[in-house]
Length: 239
Ligand SMILES: [Zn+2]
Image (cartoon, rainbow, N blue to C red):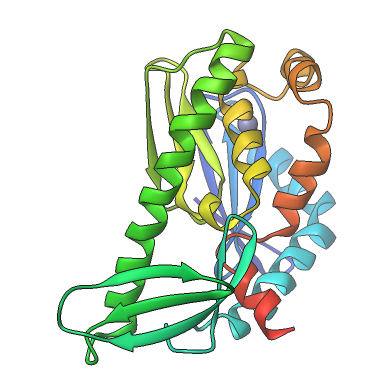
């Protein structure tokens, strides 16, 4: 269902949930609301109206960022690996692709005529294997500390969230883009998703788990929220 408030299109989905969720989604700042099935359209509209200034602020942010974020995978661009900045140097070869970190350089070797899309696909898979190695260290670490264990996990390219989980199957998904962020961000998201295995929502009980095991989690969360998904490196690079 679509509603319009003050010229803003809002996509409303009614679901079997307890609370209302409002999100402004990149890249174009679409507004999405998930609402409990019993809530009237009027109440939903009223809620959205109280959030208008926040929505507009978020949309502005995305607009600004999308102007900055065309990545071509050519020499001189910046690449972030676990929070470290590297300058991309592109070299050409027909003997297979590679990406090697050397000093403050990331040397990407690809076929000369490869498209930016193909280069991106290669770099993303490179990030994935890097991230998987770290998850294999930090997931067992936090499982052991908390006594909360997942059944399986996977990495996934996501643009709206850092992690997600299915509490029934106890499966956790971690955003591929965490490979670009400081390692404490990965640890925070791992703990956050593990905590959801015990408490589904972000209630007091959930916060209590976070406070107990990671007293500084709010700072890390703030850092993650400031680093907008997928636009972080571009933003830093052009400033
Ligand atoms: Zn959560």
